[in-house]
Image (cartoon, rainbow, N blue to C red; front, top):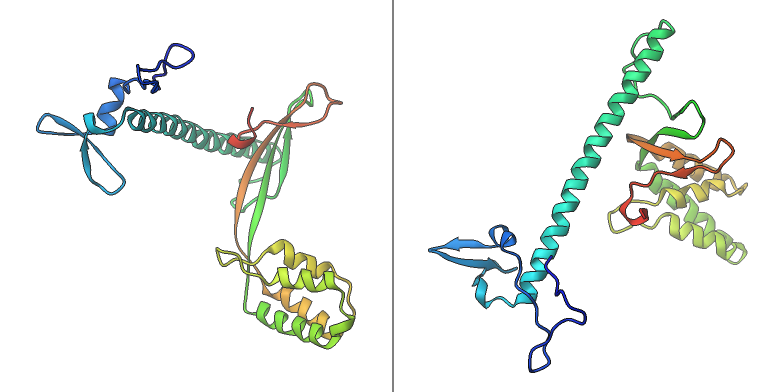
Length: 236
């Protein structure tokens, strides 16, 4: 993005900051050419001649398009990295299987770790299962609420809070798995509670899985592992 070259930013006779024109290369992507006149389309689809659009709005548009362009390039690089990494790992697994007289397995493999010879680099493949809850969860909720209603004065506030959170649906219509697991960890001997926990376990269904690659490095074999960060928010 073009920026004023002096510091502080130049101002006109009235004290207003002078905003430079957006670079010429930007205009072909951001505008529409009609009968020799260039227009910019606003958020409502209306066309405005470029010379009537404020320079700061043109610069903001150019800046956003530049950042998004870099982000799209980086996203494509990450996608290629992911594909190549899985190909490399699969090829190594196939070599191991051949080495030990096995056959290439088509089933999903479990979590595993690959280490460099010097012990300072490692790649972890982790599989996270997606869990959904069947209709048994509603039976569990009814049983739990029945227990709480009967215990009333005797039930601890923290248990009530855990229960309320466990069966709360988020904005995406999903139940919090963590909160449900918190219920399963409670040691309550009431038969109805035990039935409710059994219903929760029966309600759990694995509906898919996702495989992740995580990379780590350290300076020495005795050092602490540090992740190789790909997450934009944590990079630096």
